[in-house]
Image 1 (cartoon, rainbow, N blue to C red):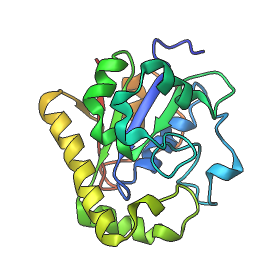
Image 2: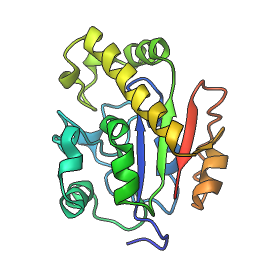
Image 3: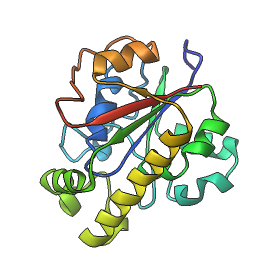
Length: 203
């Protein structure tokens, strides 16, 4: 599948955390499997490329309780949209609630976590299209009040994990690629200037 010792890169962040832009910097690496690049996984927004997983989505609809599923069943769900070779980027907001489970189940795989304040996240998410975008599907969040609560809860899930699992702060896409050991995609992003706190956890 991959020449790397890991098959997946798990990426999470609340809506509006600009996590998709962070994932995009890795997604364009020649060492990443981009066979999930399909029209139905994009609303024409260059920030959203490739498949997403989670409630209301085509894949991972039951990820709110993913800790009750087997590793084998979860990997089948991860692999559905792919047909190529290379490292596979798996993106889900709901991973923020299951970081300890992911770390324990896939100790060899890196986890990339993206953080911004609740107001910054909500404001950016609305500016990016909010409930009007067609992909990813955010209908599961119901309304703006519930979205704000979900953003706060997902941020808390990441902060709680960082409190107990030492992780690396990564200020740029170049730094992140180096830490992951994957070829730089030449899609550059200065995370610190874009007001994104990006952390990498890797056993």
